[in-house]
Image (cartoon, rainbow, N blue to C red):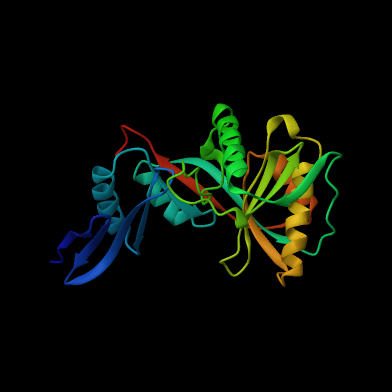
Length: 250
């Protein structure tokens, strides 16, 4: 008779062991925004259920996970464990061979400096939290670092009006393709073409640096962002589901 046992091999890692073999692995990671994401790797539904139960009993709610939108079996496993669908994110490949679009009159697109960049980030975060909530931002976007970690202005391109930052684009380049992590414009400055100017300026610069395309993820409820990227010729390549286990659910 085979006996399945669970072993906690690290503070945030679990192994399921059967006949001295590891037949499943679980991992809990706490992201910089304070949210805890769970992942489980196993071929067995029964092993998945045991690992999920142990991890949910250990990690405080809410707990999150992300799955490929096409992985129905994994999605069903998490839903069986009490998770519900929180959001869907589309993944895009964006061409970089684009002519920069001029910003509106009085707005300049330029590189960022840390102090005004932090001020803009605080203002944008406050607007997002007061409306749709920061949880609607891409799952991989780094949260506001509160001054505890250095902010790298070299990853940002900003829009400036009358000496004040009014919009930004954040790009990570330490990947096979550059990744557009965030595009944001202050509410009072929207619908004037600032986001499009920021993106085309940034993508054109990436093209000059030798990159043919960049990637981006967009929440499917963000119709304005979807229209922006699709208008630049972005092609949807897939998507992911973010699921949540709320307080009171085990």
